[in-house]
Length: 199
Length: 267
Image 1 (cartoon, rainbow over the protein chains, first blue to last red):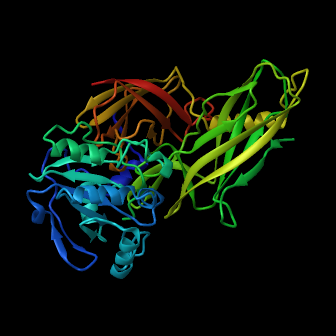
Image 2: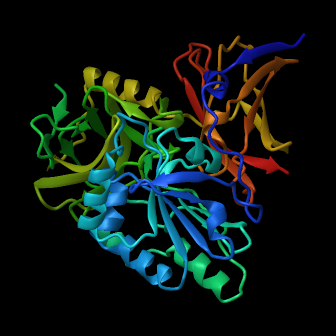
Image 3: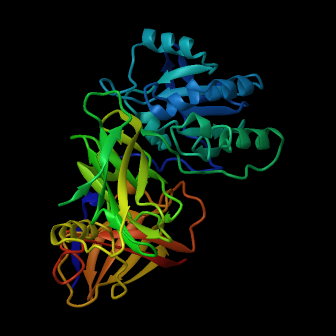
């Protein structure tokens, strides 16, 4: 006699559709989103270039850690200077933390001195769910062939403490440096840390 | 009477998100002895803090102790968490309160007053998340004879212990990697109970897909729990460390709701 018992988690299965459309070394999911100036950007536009996707929520303490310390802006500047495309993506739904008007976004980007290529708005969360973005920050690196070569945390120190940054191994930097030099990426996935994305 | 510490919260808000206190059976100690203390977190309504593995987001609570040189302290015994569904994602943590147990050992205690202090570093979330620290301290007085914990305090510690997962050797759990899932075969000790559910809490991060749902079957005197793997996981470990919770309890009396085991993974 076989008896089925469904756990609470089984119910959750029907409520959510996060994750599972991405694989390392496979083609990164295509998307088109508008930026904070109303301009459309498609992943296709950046064929032949490295693309970094950074999930962002300005008010998340983990995001603040990396911006208040200038860590993220420095990374962005370094790699955008090497012709890498760096896209910030915000999947906060309207009314949720991290969702702002375009004016407010641009004001904050300026105040932070962000050096990203664009800030993309994904308020229906479709792109975030395609990529399985769970936290802010959650980082993805796509190579010039359009394949995903890294997905996970920005570094190996899950904390909100700015003092941890100096000792941290930055996985995004490691992945970009290795790949730009024609070497294999050592750490291809890691567990992202941060605030939950506010879908 | 229960011995409570003073508690401070490093928060600017009027009502702190998290307050902590040290609970001890007695404030008297002797040399070359050991005893338990609990650090209890009181969490503001509607907010939660995080377990060892926070789930899809969040951060575990850390404790840092300042102790007299004649004291040493264990790693915490951590209470089992509950699941929170937040914005379509699953978090593991605590609401309202959580008590962590620590074992203090004394060597040659020479001072009469012995102050211990603990700093908890936590992340509390509702919709937004706020990190913070809370500090609590307590003084223990050297005594010539061991003072027994009184009945009321014993009851409080017994209650706290029921929240700590037990390593029940009589419950046999095997794990098999199967079709992008892990199948756990659970053979409860004693009479087979009708469990309404078994909640699975992996201690290791990044292995399982928390929001993808698990399935529980009862077959031939054992439970079969299938938990999907995270498609973005790294290499599977040799051993899985996990907590299994059931509201019916694993013991005959139904007191101990959670067990924790390290299980060899058959790949």
